[in-house]
Length: 555
Image (tube, rainbow, N blue to C red; front, side, top):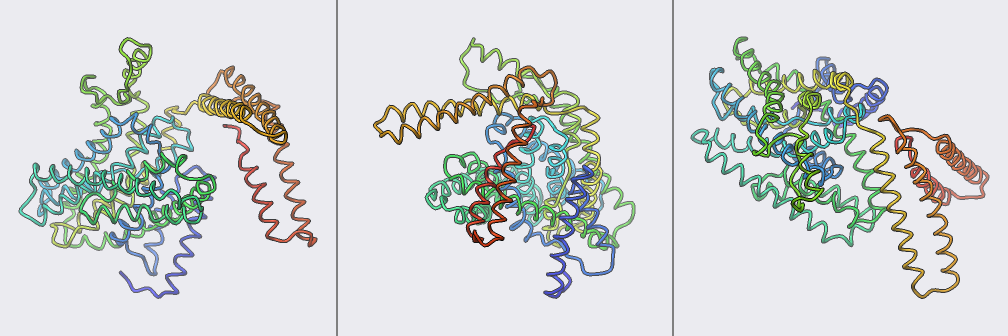
């Protein structure tokens, strides 16, 4: 790595943050994925004169990948992933294994000087899609929740599968060769150990629940958790990435029970910032690796380079849609049909069983398979993984280039065309159904609150408490009536888009303008010297929370 002065490094970081912010602004207004735009900016900078930052694989694998995966796991639904577990496992484990093995065999057969273990290491590096670009575009384009869950679940677990395969392949490359039985055993041991390590970390965090009541302490613990899970798992020689994901899924699932509101609000905001900056930096880094990987190719003939790239890119792009289509055609008895969900404890002959049987027949449609096939963008973990290869691995420089080409082809090719493809396929979430589900849940929560008020009223209390109970009851009834009117409007909707009510929109407008008037008056008090800044911040925070509770039109 080039020696860069401290001042230059600081300027580079500030410039990177400025570029990330500017690219986000462009992405929001053009609909283009920020990941692809940042990669293009990184490539442009890399070919210009000046210092470049080379990707340090150990740094990325230890300090960048765990936080990104942990935050993604916190935002995921453990129940949804479990509901679609067969599909997620098919894509994140079996497809990754097949990709790694096919690329390994192809490299071993058609690239002179390469070995099977080296080829499998390359295959493992490029096998896991990075869902960041696909999810960003998919959410903006309104992909159905099931596809979002599949992309998200696959992205969480495939990195663990790939890195475990990579570890096994590297061990084989340093030893006597690649043994499939030995590699399989080592893979399952590392994966199982990673799951156990993640569960242990999650339950340790749960045990420390009293400390999480303070928002600052909760934030510190949350930021440290992915690093602790990774280091703990790696120290006992199991999958650190899988430990991070499992810990994140369990902690995210239990967050409502084991943390307080103030901690959750602050932790969510902190992780959004961390995620925003880390993702931006890693995609800039991807583009800046171009000179490094190109300079390494001087010892290889053009035909060797073309063959290696063709095998790697070809398997990566063709196997995914082929896998999705073939999995659709498998017999139902194999329980691998995409779109089917995991069995539940349902009484035989019941209505639930009949509904369950119908659900099992609902495989993914052709349009959904097409969208999933094109959601296979690769990212920084592919480059970080391939850069961990030791110099003793045959054709190491060529493998670097192959991985870089796969990342560019998928990130730019698929990333930039995914949104137009989704729009052309007409895949959109039913916003009306989503809004109806949320409003039904809101109504149920208010009814539970009214029931709790009845319980409180049945207890011994004084007249003042009676007044407080009645005041709260009237407020809850007004809220419940509002939710029910909203539900009636949603029930009458005849399209996928959320219908608007003039009364509903007017109420939101009035509440926002009232909050704005209060905020302006508080500022006048502060400027006139009638309210100090500390008091202003406390009162403004109250208004901020009130404004944050106002739903947008889709909710």
